[in-house]
Image (cartoon, rainbow, N blue to C red; front, side, top):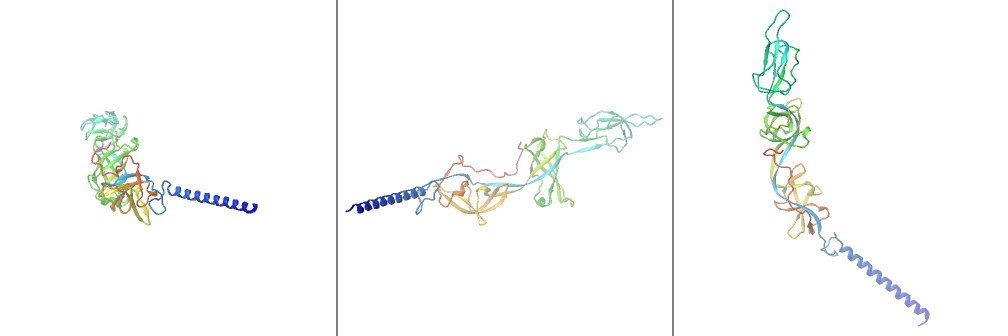
Length: 328
């Protein structure tokens, strides 16, 4: 073999070696890609499956309660304007703003005397028990029999007067519970119940007036305060309730991922019912006790392996039923 032939053979051998090495590296890279975490796995051309980390909740049948927000004014349940029995000049005041009085107590004296004629002072008495809730007239002030000396109210028994839009009128009932929040106390809640419902709808505002009374005497609450009212209306029960974030939507259909005993998931079509405050009733597709994927479902598929990192796999409570008692 001459020198030229020998050189050609060597070059061909080197090219064959380089090609074989490249093929080996490409095949090895493809193999590692198929086995990478989050890969499909479990089928033709797929590497070993890696479990996807998820958070779950346990579906529980529960009752959720719809509610209506409205505003109201806090007033005394019983109040009365006090008038004098004679015209004249106020010569003495026995009370001041906030004073407590009993029915029959003297709250002021009026002098009905005129120039050239003198009369005994005329007392003004309290017609009911309560507290002085408006500033009394001033000493020396002239008053007539139609002048209001002051107003007496029972501040130990307060009520909230509120108005509910006409579209919710069919849901109103005596005894319904409400959570009251006041600007002065942030998120602190004061419980009240519907005690009276107007028999008519106001044609001007298209609302119906309701009266709520507090479930107990709250020393913090004052007449004249502005109230934010969360009125609980209709109960819905009998179905599991799931947070809206757990649902996967596809072509106007909704699905949930259910975790099975072998730690794989199945994608199940469901029917949603009433939605209250971000929680849906599930009327078809799941049962009480099913473990539902709440977070991490976007990387799942039918049969995917999962690893629950919830810590405590428990149901997250939906909008609660109307409170039965005080929640302070």
